[in-house]
View 1 (tube, rainbow, N blue to C red):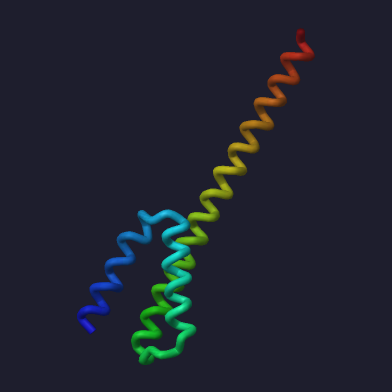
View 2: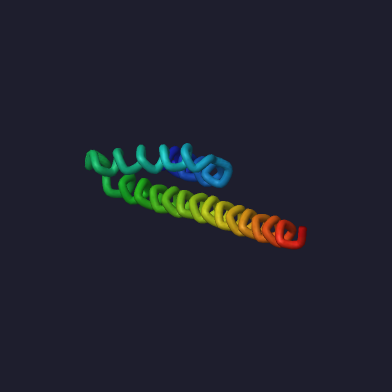
Length: 90
């Protein structure tokens, strides 16, 4: 069980620093292990908990990317409006 707690601590650190692709890949691997159904209940519960954390992190990363895209679109639209205003003034 001591090894399990060490591995449970490891992903917490790296899941904050990992890319979406890395985090999603780890989530997929966790799901595969759970779907195999060969784990004792305590290990399955631990994996499920880790999977939920990974899913939450993926969602955070996607939300952040969506916000960036939205801000870029707004900035672009504002620039286009300014260009149109300048063209009308000329």
